[in-house]
Each structure stands twice: as structure tokens, then as C-alpha cells.
Length: 188
Image 1 (tube, rainbow, N blue to C red):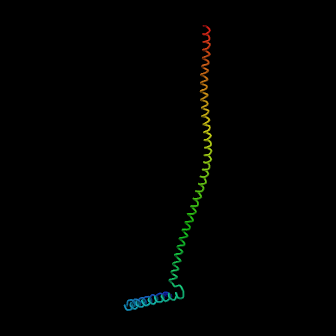
Image 2 (cartoon, rainbow, N blue to C red):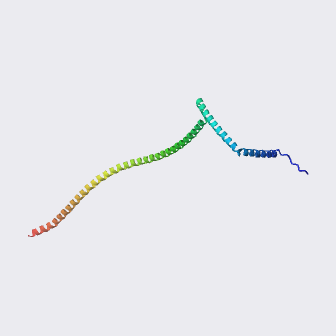
Image 3 (cartoon, rainbow, N blue to C red):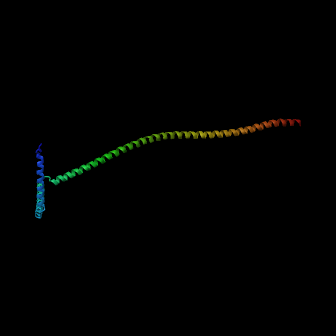
């Protein structure tokens, strides 16, 4: 039995890439560890940033002459669009809240109208009952006046009866006294 290993190209490629990575990292470390390289890189970066700033200014000037939007214009428009959408959403929410409050207030108004109708109905009933009561009161007053009159008449009749009884009593006394008087008078 022999130890035969099969050839794996991926493993070889992996080993090769690890070697390259290590060599490149060492090379970069040597370059960046050098003060002159850092100074040169810093100067190159400053020059590049000035170049980009000049290029940006020139592009904006050319865009304004050609009436083309710049990147900052598009950014501003996008921000304005987002702000507008947010404001529209807020307004929609306020409109929905207003609609809900209007619906609830209309329901309250309807209930108040119903209650008002009931109150009006009761008021009309009370008014008719008041008219009836006034009429009955007037009738009662006239009946009271008539009763007072009848009472007065009864009182007169009672007085008349008493006088009549007194007269009757006097007459019966005189009848009993007259025969006595007439009988005593004939004896003389």
C-alpha cells in the first residue's frame, strides 16, 4: 500500500494566495513605515483633493451655464421630496383625525337634535295640558263661585228656616196660650 495523495489544485492555489498576501502585506508595511513615503503620499493626497475641488467647481459652473442639474441639486431635490412626502403624510393624518372628529360631532349633533325633538314634543304636550288646566281652573273657579253662592243661599234658607221655626214655635205658643186666655176671659 502506497501513500498516494491526490493532487488538489485548490489547496495549491490557497497556499500560493497566502504567500502572495504575506509578501504584499510586508511590502506595504515597508512602504508605509517609511517617513518619506508618508510625506509623499500626504502631498499627493492634498494635490488630489485640490484637483477634485477644482474639478467640482468647474463642473458646477459648466452645469449652470448648460442649465443641467448637479449632484448637489439632485440631492437637494431628493431631500425636498422626502420632506414634502413627510408633510403630506402628516397632513393626511390630520385630515383623517378631522374627519373622525367631524363624524363624532355629527353623531353628537344628531343625538342633540333627537333630544331637542323630544323636548319640543314634551313642551307641546305640556302646553296643551297647561291650556286644559287653565280651562279646568277657570271652570273650578266658576264652580267655586257658584258653590259660594249656593252656600250663601243655603245659609239664607237656614236663617229663613230658623225664623220660620221660631215663628212656628211662636204660633204654636200663641195657640196654646190663646185658648188659655180665651178660657180665662170668658170666666170673668
